[in-house]
Length: 204
Image (cartoon, rainbow, N blue to C red; front, top):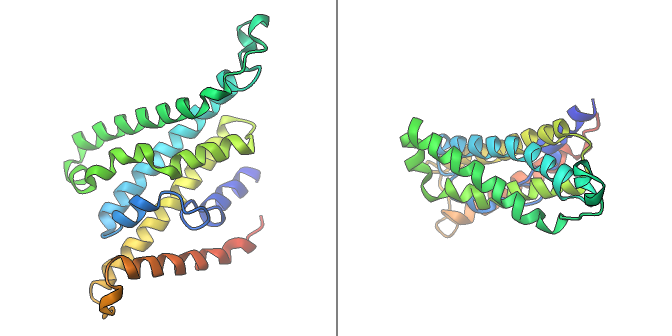
């Protein structure tokens, strides 16, 4: 039940877009059509699902003060926590590189439509933010970290697909000229953030 609660919270209440405003650059830029937005959302979700348990293991067994005690007593006092950011970014970048090669091979159309925003997943602050939140919350095992990663990814996917669907409909709407484009997108994002605040009452 605890993991289910974490999963639901990470999708609706602690949503990376609407609660923390992380990953906004690609969220706003790639949300012009549903197909592309869905592809990017799945890619981000995949990276989050793999990155969180991997970085949990790295933090738990390599970086924390005393984490190297399994190598012997002489390493019990070692503290490599200062390498945390570098190691986390390296893991995320490696996963994104693998994902980019897979998408280029099996879905060239999606690869071309995502353009520069696919390799930029490596610096998507929603992914690094989820890793740092995981470290801050001190999850007890990699399974809990995986649940949080999957929930955060689905939350980000839900946010970008919803915005893309609305923006597609806006092409046929009579939007005042000064608000066309990014202006109305900011307003819709704000309204969606307010709507997601209604989930604050969820308690499992």
